[in-house]
Structure formats: structure tokens, C-alpha cells
Amino acid sequence: MKTKRTQAFLLALLALWLSSCNLTGPRPTEPQPFTATLEVASPLQTAHPGGTVQVPVRVEFREGEGVRLEVRLADPCAKGTSNCPGWDATRYPGVEHPREAFTLTPANPRTTLTFQVDPGALSQGPFKYEIALTSPDGKEAVLPFYLKVLAPGERPGMEAWNFWRDYMDLPRVKEDPEWSFRAWLHSRYVAMNYPNDLPHDEDLSQPFASPEGREAGQKGNEWGSLRRQNSQPYWPAEETSISSWIAAPFHRFNMIDPRAVNGGFGIYKDVGPVPGYGDGFGRSWANLPNLYGGERGNAPLLFPAPNRPLALNRFDGRENPNPTAPCMNPDRPPKRPFLTQEGLTWDDGAGVVRTPIGLPLTLQTFPTSPVDTEVLSARLVRLSDGAVNPICAYGSLQYWEERDFWRERAIQILRGWGAVIALPHQPLTPGETYEAHLRVRLGSEEREFTWRFSVAEEAELRPLRLEPSLEIMEIR
Image (cartoon, rainbow, N blue to C red):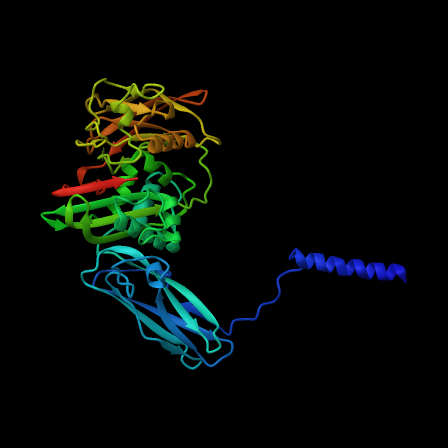
């Protein structure tokens, strides 16, 4: 009898322990009385200015007499979780969404939601909506829907990113619309607080800051353009931000990393002031959160890609960290950068490239742990006439710039990717073929790379920069 009582006690104790550790499995949940579906190919849709997007919604009822459907803005400004002075929190810029409530029933389980874009709407987004369905007893289902405004003929940022993934023969990046929306939030925050915003971060006490936008800023590239052309606000095509990041060596590394198979892209545009320059600027800010998720590279990655036509030929500067700083200050790093020719001018002395230089060459080797890198020699020759394009090349041991934060960041990037950078002094000639050579030290290993690449004809070069009357641009 005592043994049976002991066994019963131990079984009860075991059941209690399993329950406390949640090892007995979840309790069965009550099935939802209804399920809702957006009858579109993707929850992210694109519309042109002046156009409409129609979103069919279907509800399947297991029980109940009906549900109430409403469209809500997922914007923290509309939810009241961000401080957004002067912002119209009733709509996204240039888009009118359904504001009336709909009742769906088993007899009438479908409706179509229409989103109307103003003819003068600026290309930007994506915006996020919440399609909320509520039953009479308070049960709710929320479907996310994302809408991007894009001018006819304009290449989306994600498509432009994948253009370069294809060029490098790398896996394409799959867009996560939630992170693209967060990137739009972060870009708006930067526009509203520039120049007092935080690089790759947000101060949550500032206007338009949000935890969602902050996360996007911490995960990816930033780009900004503040422009007036012929005394009018001007906004470059969003593909320009992608071209600028690819042209900028420190921002290129993550975009052509083989692991970059998931990500987002968001861009914010408006007309507003620029402190110190006046009002009426076309303000554009973009963010590209890189979510990675793929396999680490197992072979050195050269840019430009060997034996393929290159659709960029120059670098206009304005990158943080500053890639020209060690070229202008060769005696400041622990080891001198490799210079084909001493005394050349690479920027204006303040880090601004006034005259475009050649598109940077890069090498990434993907070490399992960070390594010191060094360029021992470098060469770039135009094959048609043997002309040598002078080079400034460096690795982590040869980098320097005066700002501590960006200097440490640059060295971290070069060591983490096992990378080096080589800057040609002159823009590459469209339609020509080049031969490049790098001799580098990666940790204790010395390696050499020689390859050829061609530059696309002038008409095939990707958009990088126009020459407006007044421009402020930043890549960080």
C-alpha cells in the first residue's frame, strides 16, 4: 500500500513539474470563428501617382453572423506612439484609403478595398495598413497590407539591388515588406531631424522616432539627398540610392555579401527646409535593412566582377566612413596605403570629392574571424592603350580618418570581411576593358589576384548623380 501511495505521489509530482516547465504541450486554443484572406498575389502592392489599387478581402466563417472590417494606419504617428508635430496622421502622404466600415457576413463574405493615389504624390514608401476584422464578441484578426508609390518607368530599389546581385552571380534578395515599411519610418525620422539625427539609430525622445524605425536604421545602409534644381525641389529616382551605395566601397560590402538573401528597402520624400540653406528642398532619405540569412562566402569576391560589363564608372564621394582619407593622409595610418603616384589630390582636404574619381575596386575574403589586411601592390591598366590609372589602395592596417567613430567602424568593416579597397584616380572609360591586379596580405597569408573587366557603354551606365543647382548628399 505504501509503495502504491509513493508511486501516486511521484506521478503527481512529475505532472506538476512537467506543467511548470511547459513540457506537457500547449493547451488547446479555441478556433477562430472566422479567417480572412487578402486575394492579392502579395501583401505589398505598387501604384503609380494618379492610380488606384484594389484589394479584395474574403472571410470564411466557421460560426457567427458577421464581422466588421476597418482599414487602419499602422504608422506610429497615427497610433499615437510617436510624437509627430505637424503631421497629418489621418492618411499617408498622397494616398486616400477606405475610411468607412464594412460588414461581411456568411451570405456576403467578400468586399474590395480601393486605395487612391493623388496625381501629384511623390514616389515613396511602402506604407503599412492594418485591415482589421472584428466579430460582435470582440474577436479580432488583423491583416497587414503595404502600398508603395512609384512613378511610371521608375526602377524599384529592391529590383535595383537585385540587378547587382545578378551581376555578381549571387542569390537574389527577397523583400520583407515589414522591414521595408520600417525602413520608410526610419527614413522619415532622418528627414525630420536632419542634421540632428543619429547615424544608423534613433533617439526615441525626438520627433518621429519609433522602435520599429530604429531597428531598421541599425540593420542597414542610409542615403540622403537634399536638392533644388532650377530653384525647384528635386528628387532623384530611388535607384540612385542603390547605385550610390554600390559605388561607395564601405556600403557595397554588405550588399554583395552572399549571405544577404533577405532584406528591405524604404524611401521617404517630401519638400522641406535644410538648416543653413533655406526652404523648398526636395528631401529624399532611404534605408536598406540587410537581414542576411544565407550561407557565408567560401571564395574571394572581386568587384568589379571578372569578365562582365560594369554599369558604373565613377565615385562621387560623400561616404561615411570616408574612403579617400588615407589617400590624402598617407602618413597617418599605422602602415602607409599603397600609392601608384605620390601627391595626387583625392578630395578637397575636408573629405569631399569635388572631381569624381574612378569606381573603387574591392576584395572580400570572408574569414571565419576578423583579420588584419594590407595591400602590398595594386595596378589598373586600360588595355586599349596601356594607360595606367593611378591607384590608392589599403587594408585595415592602412586606414585612417580623423573622426574616431568612423575610423573604428572602417577598420572593423575591413577586418570583418577580410577586405581591401583600391581607388582609381580617374573615372573609368565607358566601353573600355581593364586589367586589375592586387597583391595583398590577409593575416599571415599573402595572395595575388589578377582579373579583367569591361565598362558598359555610356548609355548603359546606371543613374548615379545629376548636377542640380544646389545639392547636399550623404551616404552612411
